[in-house]
Amino acid sequence: MPRAINSLSSRKHSFKLVGTSAIHVLARLAARNAIKEQLRARGVRVTLVRPAGIAEKAKAYLEANPHLYEEAIQRALRMGLIKQHPLSMER
Image 1 (cartoon, rainbow, N blue to C red):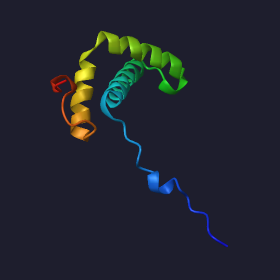
Image 2 (cartoon, helix red, strand yellow; image 1 turned 135 degrees about the vertical axis):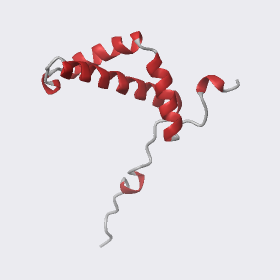
Image 3 (cartoon, rainbow, N blue to C red; image 1 turned 45 degrees about the vertical axis):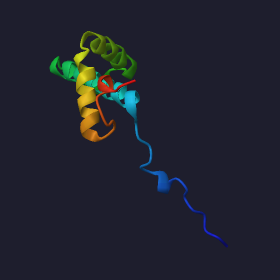
């Protein structure tokens, strides 16, 4: 009897964020982490805060701190997720 082959095992590491999606994810992640640090600094247990509440605060934090996008671009470049700065790409 033939053995079943796990077709997902070969694709385990095949998913990669690309381009602007990677930049947005990295910027949102930085904003979420900043909010979590603020909560911890106030003595709040982050595990007891609703994820939706953190996401809402992170969205506002990201809007107020657009420099997080530039940091996300630099991080994506270092990680090899993008080849060059998106604003330097010629159309």
